[in-house]
Length: 114
Image (cartoon, rainbow, N blue to C red; front, side, top):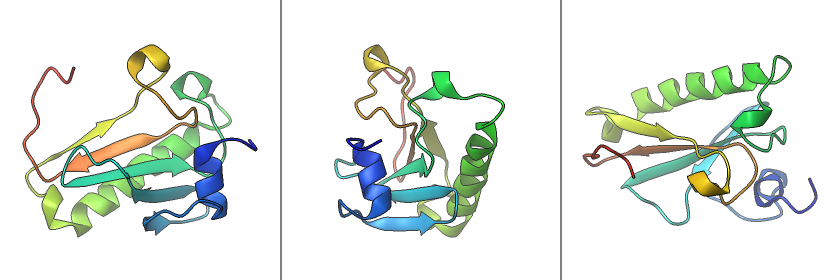
């Protein structure tokens, strides 16, 4: 999508601090971190939100979780645990309508989340 912030980040039109990239997924640091470690994991294919996951594109979500596992093993901040968050829709707090997962670590988290 032409006006999608995350699509522009993937294309390099908007700078980001890249953590990881492969042919399917792009991972970068959140510009407004909610934890000492706060990464955003986004599929390179534009998928609006979790409601648009289907049989054709669901493999990218599985791959994102494989990347989460890899990153969690490489960073000492993840040793005591971490949180993965996905917001779907405006009422849930989604502000960029490109499927993404927040990966947070480095502090203790509370429940309920909010």
